[in-house]
Image (tube, rainbow, N blue to C red; front, top):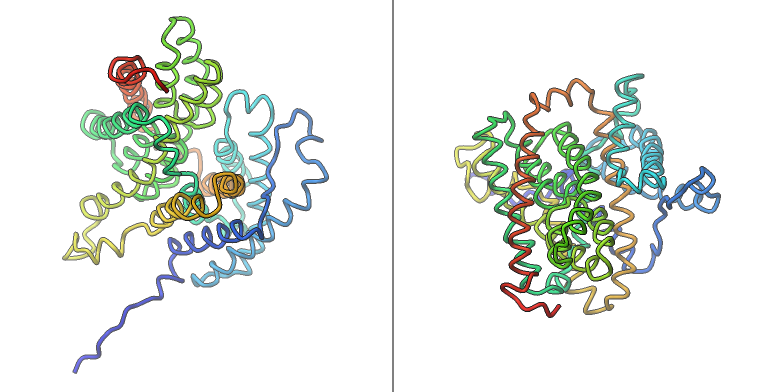
Amino acid sequence: MPEKKGVDWSPLWKLEDWWAVWFGFILIFLIAGGLITKVPKIGTWATLGEAFPASNWVPLLTLMIGLGILTAIGIQAMGKSAAKYALAFPVVFALAVLASACSSYTVAKAYNLETPLWGLAIGLLISNTIRTPDWLKPAVKTEMYIKTGLVFLGCEILFNRIVALGAPGLIVAWFVTPIVVIFMYWFGMNVLKMESPEFCITLSAATSVCGVSAAIAAGAASGAKKEEIGVAITISLIFTVLMMVGMPALILATGLDPDVGAAWMGGTIDATGAVVAAGAFLGQRGLEISSVVKMIQNVLIGIIAFVVAIIWVTKMGREESAQHAAVKEIWIRFPKFILGFVAASLVFSFIFIPAMGEAAVDGFLKSTKAFRGWLFAMAFISIGLDSNFKDLINKIEGGKPLVQYIVGQSFNLVLTLFIAWLCFGGILFPKTW
């Protein structure tokens, strides 16, 4: 008789996707249990002394050691050398600290020059000048950092905040976004004839949802190359700065209803931080409307990543199995970190908030956001260290990504303005919020 095979549980400790979930939830439960109460970060600074105060050195060193030990355990379990990783990790972390410090400079903050952009630039500078040394490469773990950071991002998707603006906010955030994603992908693939579907969907998601996080999620779900994710984020961040400054000025100059303008910005400006900065120009009410619309829209990150993963597994992937779309094949190839993203959202929304209250959860979120920031910083340092300018330039494809972004964002601006006018201009709903 043939030997009956049991369930193979080894992927739970051998696959990077699962380790991203374990890393995330180990730290989440340490935070919820009160063992981690504060995660250090670089504060806004104008002089170098303010950037690296003596009081922050020990917390940063502790963070580096803690993250290094935790991730080294996973590296060893995945069959790689924990010793080589541990030797290189402090350098990657130190470069992430440098990138975070650059983005926290008052001038950089004013122009929304975020940590991922600095991380990419620093990594590229090293890899294209002195070249990334071989001993550093064991800690250049772009996908591991990205996937773990995305699990933390799930913590911030709280369902009680989705209903804060009711139907108007939901319509602006959820009606327009899928339409723009589909339109941009169709335009990129059928009109511009872009070579990489993965790059096309990554840029579409970055434009339609929230820039960096959406690009990372869609890129990871579709299997986009690191350089493609980097280019998508760079394009998004450049235009985010322009929109952050230009949209409030346009709204104020034209006398557009501030509620409509705030919802418009919340649905179109890519980065959450930039939405907050732009919304402040329209007063406290404008700040709240724009921020909540963006938070509601951010919920779609996980949904879009989930849908993209399913489509790429069943329709876009290589012919790796005769039963290409079978449930088992889908499960094998499905990005497991997305399950961690969804689980984190559910745990925070339906366990932590009811059991501990919103005030306690807000405290937890300060720590999870800080962890996410450090992981994304290390991810973009790694992208830069593992890339070269020639690769990035090749991804521009004669300007096609720029054209895709400009056309897609223009479509997004027009459609979102119309829907915001219907929902927040007193046309479909009374102005009671």
